[in-house]
Length: 335
Ligand code: SF4
Image (cartoon, rainbow, N blue to C red):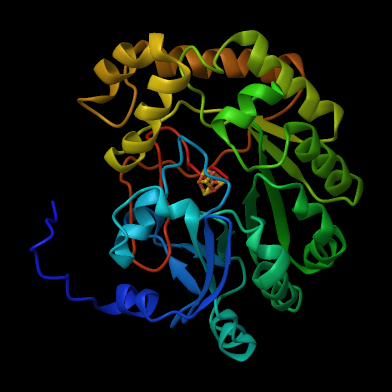
């Protein structure tokens, strides 16, 4: 813990670059900054070493209460987990450097866009980094691309994604945790309404782009009822999604520092149980995850939606420039 008399930490690497970023604009409580980036394409580690990752932004204004990626700001010495949603860094895009990195990828390589922040968060409307990166991807061939978002802004890029799909495999994952607008507003305060996200699912699927709907994270006694998950899955199928999945919440310490106070305010009757479950481990174990898996399989079969199998890993591999996080059961790409 830092005290007033402590010397300021010596900033190195990404933290030094973050500290020297020019403030472009302060809008309400959100600061938008540009961040110099040495590398745009990161890489998983351990068994996921073969996966490449791209995150056009650092921080995410959507401010989901369960967000697992908040500690990405800790690499920049930004210790307050709420700064993740208030200090948004757009990577300074250098098209030639990005294309040079793309050229090093091989036919068949897998690239995930938006593993640690949402590529279509509000900052994209002004910085357009995601769009410019996708334009470069459109000139590539033979890549296996995945993009995860919680924003209907992705529909803006449907023609560009379709162009990419002509020479590559691409799948868009749209996260919808509930159809209950009020609950969504509590959990994901600045993310577009579920109805808008479903509209994006329809637009993309009508353009011929495969879309998965992810109901991650499933939160005990909040959005885990069969009725709630079934509603999301049914709506996903009706709007043209080709797969559906859902996996239980995990809460790393950094996420707990936001999620548990949120529970105290909005779901005080659940606080004790959540504390008991998560104080020993970030992951729910035992009967609950098995029960959710079975529930989701039943619902998926009911609506004839496959589950797209993702590589499994028990290790949470990390890298400093790009993040890929995993739950024990599935690749966890919550946006
Ligand atoms: S959209 Fe994703 S990255 Fe953004 S706050 Fe929500 S969970 Fe975190």
